[in-house]
Length: 155
Length: 78
Image 1 (cartoon, each protein chain N blue to C red):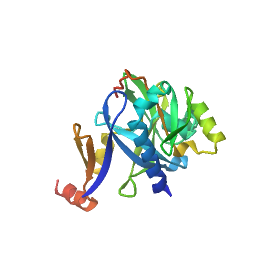
Image 2: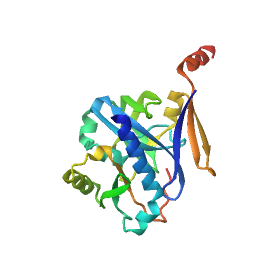
Image 3: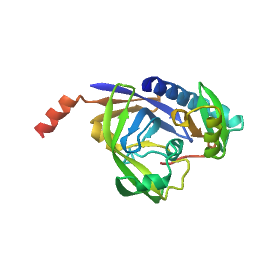
């Protein structure tokens, strides 16, 4: 069992669970550090507006790259995302995972949209999220791959 | 290299969130702020101008912690 420390910060009038990781996007040939809000209300992992701007990737370039497009409802509006399948998330050398990550390409008029680590990450990594709001403590426990394979074979 | 950069980024993120009230009091409300070594090194209402300022200072914006300073009463619902 591996343990990944998360941070609990006050942000925009609320306690948020935050994860810091290294994001590597093969399709864009880019690699950057990310701070994402762990959002169990989001089914997808989404890269936020500030992070995309920092990478200096235009929405036109994103649209023209290969990858699936997907409509996503967020904050009461609908946006379109481009999904990059070959994206790696590395948590301080402690844990790395390859998973699809969504990049907004249309309809995202919120310049403050933060990056989100969604339920898809928890499922893909077989992670359990622990959160104690009053102590401002949070962490992920990730089952070892071997154990995951055994458990899946017993289903 | 990547791990060191991630650690620095995380320390600057920690500093930003711990000092958000000071940043709000010091006139950063409504601005994007870039943090390096626990200090704001560039800020502007337009994030593209923050990136330009970082370029002039020889910094790589993609490796720095940049966040928007919301007003005190602003509540973000995801």
